[in-house]
Image: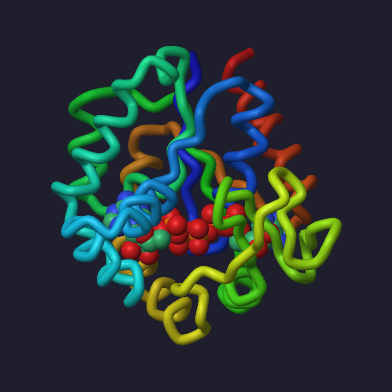
Length: 213
Ligand code: AP5
């Protein structure tokens, strides 16, 4: 059983690393952002409401997110653990999580602000399978085409620079304070997110194996 949280600011590399860790440890990545974008794509009334939060970079309401997350972790593929990517992000969310389970390890990706803006603005994602690329740091083999499934790559609507800066401000105000909560619980490890994608992955694997061993 391995229950992880990948924590850190927008575009720190949570999704990139969660996809790799998911393959290595055989446990699912649960990305709140991907779940929300899937709801928006269905164009249901709830999806339209969620879309207005995503487009502006504001956080969605806690009750909606907590319900979405708890429904997901109750599924059978989570029986041996999971990787939370993008949850929790508020004190309200972490308090609800603490009521239902104990997380083994929080991997806190630390990256300086201007590097985050460059990562977000250059990000491209697969519209079908949600694989993540970067025009400079992690380009696909053929420009604009997903290596995994061959679908077209797109830029997320919230990766325009002014929305990215808004998301970073909201992270600093509402999400970063959770680090102190995890430090009190003693289950958080800082990861140097300025290393390349492989370097960050190696640090995470080492932290997980040290914890397990
Ligand atoms: P979400 O989709 O979770 O966005 P985020 O947290 O802002 O995180 P990102 O997806 O931007 O980045 P990431 O850290 O996964 O980085 P990635 O690996 O892609 O949430 C979107 C929205 O949904 C929120 O704004 C909010 O409205 C809502 N929401 C979601 N969860 C919520 C919650 N719990 N409560 C309320 N609302 C919620 O990497 C970024 C780029 O950098 C990529 O191009 C990648 O190739 C590149 N890269 C990655 N690592 C490296 C590296 N080491 N070196 C160089 N480049 C790298």
